[in-house]
Length: 357
Image (cartoon, rainbow, N blue to C red; front, side):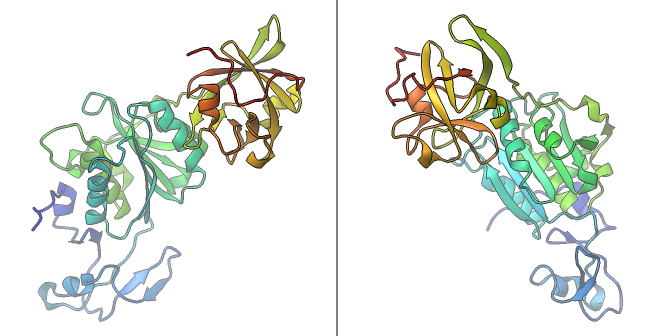
């Protein structure tokens, strides 16, 4: 048998009965179970979790309960962390969520953010958030866990979304992509947290139980004190800048913001930014000079050549068809790439001219 899961104080309140994590309103004399859908229309049906109605109605010998889903309830939680999958951290955090709020659906956006890399996590969140369903987003890349850094909740889109995470710049870009912060709160109400022997697992002890509280219809105002949205640390997003080179003329300094699992190197520029430099770009990476033809898909890149692909997020990515541009060019996230107008005459082979890095 597993040990009994720690339960935050909010779930022990006598004025709100909790049935396997789902709050319900028990109304005497009701002989059936009615579920109020997200549209506000009641539908007759079964209880939201097997056995819930029986346990609800068994109290005092009363009839089964009427389950009323609040408009404040959220049914979806998205997760983004640097926890990786080798340890039990992700599974434990999800277990806390499911035990306290069994009705939620959970999407793992990624747990592969490089350890401690807040900027990489922030950019990943910004890329993903436009496709995330309404609900709660837990983002944890938290080198300062257990310190004086704040744990926060940020409300967006008129309450349709809530971001939970450390106030270290991780949430800023995602919040901006969601339209900006409506309200923000510090997660200072410890009654909502799990009691723990240490302070180094905020995903389990703070963010997951607070998410469950909100998913069960808890008021955002109860998570802690409200803070000025302007005080939330913004995300750090690199921007391109003009560059003049004595040999190559006027151009643009870009940065590799992300290298995906295929070795595609996303730059911090879009197609409109590179359009003035023509259909073939001249790339200066360190002392190496390369060329890259602007294309719309990988198969349009000549064998072994470097292409500038407009990727699925609408950004320019340096790519090799069925190969790794990161390995070919020996670049990684954070490296500078200078872009100039190309003439098509510089090398496009997969053989790098770089002597070493």
